[in-house]
Image (cartoon, rainbow over all chains, first blue to last red; front, side, top):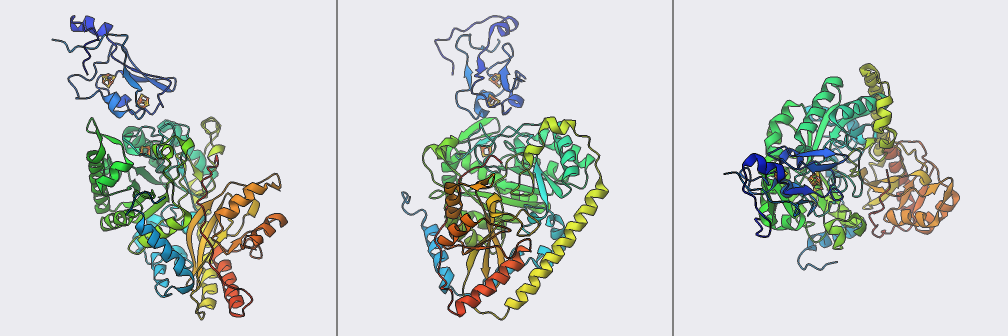
Length: 94
Length: 517
Ligand code: SF4
Ligand code: SF4
Ligand code: SF4
């Protein structure tokens, strides 16, 4: 998963979280099925106008919790929960 | 059609058998199916051989008792949008295709909205006896919403029976919760017990925080489904198994599935046709996988009958269906309307109404029994199909042109046996029938010898006669089985006197048209 092209930041964890948004949901594809929502270990996913969104500062790519990003694994529509390449990837603190 | 060599052989054989069956088959054994409680008149209003404690559970459940489905209604509430597997016949933009027809979207409800809706409908439609949660995704992939809804409903309306539908993946984890919630019916969709076949039906599952694919996924799924079924049977919960018949993939194999579920205590097996069209956007729709014909479906259902009841009155209802099977009143009860209704839950009124329904069922069975006695001296190998236009209550009470569906009965000297339903688009709108719609209906029931209606216009009448189907309207508003048997007796008479040449009819298309209802 770790792509070399994506810049990685090694700041203190707090600061780091403020600037990382690794995963996003493409609203136009989301069916609003809610499958992803209860699975997120960081409670980063919530409903917004019939579609679901990932809260920017909370997503940790599930690192330390699960082997696969839960939202990606559960989502019925391929390529709907995707890495937001405009933003840096999450780096586990420490 | 038979691209996969070796597959499909069973069904072909069964179909051949079905064809042979009409004039020549060894007639004995047909009466044995009366045991299932679905044949003849439903003596004792349908109880048949069922032990009384089971009959009590199913007698007013429209899905579990064929006889009950003429009289009682069910409703679904769409509180469970998420799912934990992917089926190749499902497009997840729409409702779960295991319980619903493809291409249907329900309005999602919160548990609180759902309860209000249940109460409103229980008051408006007193014959509504069953609440099901069947999606729009998987009931057990949304456990919090599903069980909260059940809990609220059982507090507010304790006489309503609760049931849920699931693909079975999460089932073993929730068996105890199901028992505690007083859910007495569970439907599990089981399409295979062989992971190699499963891999052709399920591209992936989500289980234990991981996505599994291929044979590994199908293996987990089948293990969990069968384990869940066993656990429920041990606890005395009635299980219905739904299976989707997919020609050349699991058609032969469903006989194995039937054995596997029967031996694990399933109560009822419902084999449904795959409904597949490119516009549904499903994997099967896109790759041109066809659904079975009416005769293939019936042949498979017949082959599976014996140890377990086969359900033949399934309408593949939508996740927010309301009313008698086949007559969806869902559109009358949108969330906005329900929220505005002033609801007084009146248990006594519901009981009084249901008592009247019970009396009606008894007189229906008695009338049928009398007619059947007149048939007892007859010896004939003739078995044929007839279609009936009905709005429910076991009566021939629908105009041909208004019928949204036809109920199918197989007639023989053993009586009238309900064998299925054909849905057709309503062709008569504003009094004018359209030619092409009429011919769709004729194609949909062209394996029938007669169609029983309350009324029929001159045009459709002559079209039916031309197609070799006899329109029968002299039994308008009478009981279905009794009338069908009476007609059959006179048919046998005519054959004996040489006035009618008895011949077989061809196969019919399973009508694929999905009406909005
Ligand atoms: S990747 Fe994991 S942490 Fe990030 S939103 Fe998805 S489920 Fe939550
Ligand atoms: S699982 Fe996918 S489709 Fe369902 S709500 Fe989440 S992002 Fe949307
Ligand atoms: S279980 Fe139902 S909702 Fe889930 S993928 Fe299969 S048909 Fe669709």
